[in-house]
Amino acid sequence: MSPFPTIMIAECDEDERCLLKSVLELKGFSVLEAGDGQQAFDLALQKHPDLILIDLKLPVVSGFTVIRRMQKLARLRRTPIIAVSLNKPISHRSLALAAGCAAHLNKPIEFNELDSLIDQLLPGSRVELTSALIQ
Image (tube, rainbow, N blue to C red; front, side):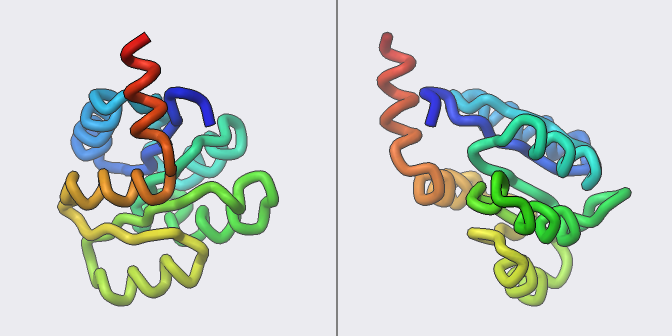
């Protein structure tokens, strides 16, 4: 993993995407953005982010479909995916985990919970970020 892991945010709400991007960049992550499911799939395929944060209700192609497509590709299958949803969180959570997501978050996102998940899914990223920022 590079000293600055890359996180892709797939979220159709520009304000939410911008907030998440700002928070993650302040923590030292590189951030990629996608506003719909097709953009998310294409960007993930092209850039191979270290972690993906994806809304399940994306326009053009749903987040569920994007996740299933990624799971079929060896080069993306091991990329940790955190699904995000607002509606029916219990059913969305179980469907997201069954589709191959590593975790699920409810909206509005609790940033402490997001931090904890990132630490779990990108082990060592905090240590690497700290040492990279000190240099």
